[in-house]
Length: 56
Length: 578
Ligand code: HEM
Ligand SMILES: [Cu+2]
Image (cartoon, rainbow over all chains, first blue to last red; front, side, top):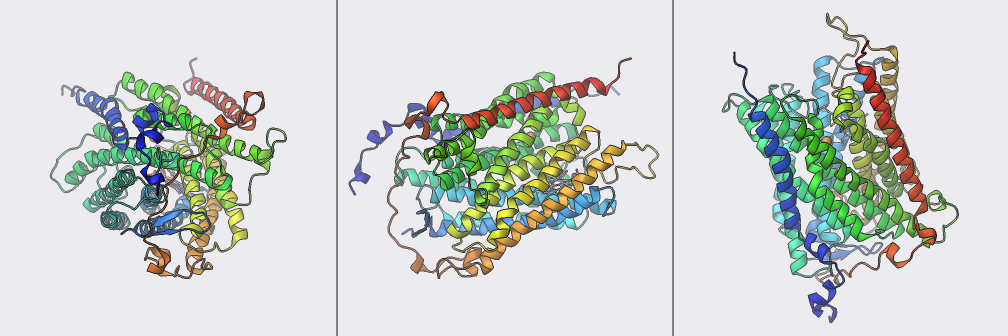
């Protein structure tokens, strides 16, 4: 089929560069894990871990 | 050689192996919904003060099983079916490593059975949050971990399928928006499961005595990375289902791919941070942490939901207007197929999620006013609007869509099916609204006896609270009836529905492969790039492509603002200063 041989670049022209970047699922996975790990989990765990224990 | 069949009615392609997995996961999900529904009836009849059905210990056991079976098992089994559908069928691709997908499925079944068995054995009534220092049987935690490993395998099979589809060039350009949404759900699921492992594995070790102590505050922080994120898998996935159904029923194209994808991207960045809204009243964590994660991050995620809530009906409106339904602001909506349960389920899901779930969620996520309703029955009121009206009804609509397409059976009881979404939606709305109302009066959640009979430190709720819980009880019974009708129609269709294809026998309804004659070895033609977008191609008059949707959005905004300030007023009345 002629259609299948169409070079990739040609069709990618119709897609904005931004969309091409976020088309990568592994990039999405990285952001999706990194953001909450840093801002929610690590920061939250640090706060709980640094609560001073009662003196007696 | 991968085998495919094409649905003659919709043109969708089904990969043989993927198809069976979709069926098996969907059926397992519906079985879990059935169990959860029976348990829901027992729970709601106990919380209806005039009935007060179960004794205390049975109530807590049944409540634990209801939450887990509904929110974890029903929702996630069905999500697996959606992932396989979005990765394989929508991309016209073979599924990567179907054997691993089956292994994942088996693990999920084993885990689910283990956990439920532990709960029903009676010594694991720790609620679905399983907060330490309450201790369940070890097999309770182990079952959840095994279930999660199975789901994780499913997620990687999905990612693998994306890679296969790209390498084998099964589609042109970018993946369709629905698949993009499923990808977002999948990556959120991976974070969720990782968080679950971080907390449930240590808790399991603690339950068998390897670890002596787990700090309850620490548990809550990490557990909610699991508990909240898992709900965001549902949001990402049910939004994708809204787009899918709008596309199938109306031929609606997203108003703007860019805007919709950007909204999904906001989910990726910010949605999980909002986990902090569950810890608003926890001591030991700073206000900086709470405010950054909720007031800043959460509102960006809420913005994304509002964008989806606007672009889905907007796309429908544009599609309907193109068909000539242009009178007034709302002809497009009045003349929508309200008798088609696929559409009505989806639309009730959208409106209920936005108005009931969305507005109450933002209120609860505000540090100051959260304290008024923290741990009251308001919270179950809120999340039954999101996970039941929102997610569950979206899954129900998709099921109605898939009965002929995937299972190749004609739906039975079409007249009853027309009514089912309204019955379920009405019942569940009553539950949500009246639980929220009772919660505003302080009625506790997860509480067996709001009368505190025989308790020396009792508390007397105003009589109105009893009335409100009674109405919620009636709503719950209506909802269970609506849910039972759904299951009767769905399962009945698989068993008794007219075969649309001679190969679609009884076993085939439950995941056995269709005879080889149903498939061909021919590779499906490459999925063409989506045609031009609805709006960009054709601008309506007055600059508004979707004026009706714009009005709906304004109604939502005004309701939200009014309700938000009412809550600040309540807050001012909590502690009298005189
Ligand atoms: C069929 C209609 C349903 C009814 C009438 C119903 C009713 C209830 C009631 C009365 C409670 C107890 C509130 C309390 O005392 O704290 C509850 C809890 C809960 N329900 Fe439902 N429910 C239904 C369906 C669902 C579905 C479909 C889901 C999930 C998708 C769900 C998820 C939950 C969860 C997670 C809890 C909390 C359990 C806990 O506190 O640990 N429910 N439900
Ligand atoms: Cu949450």
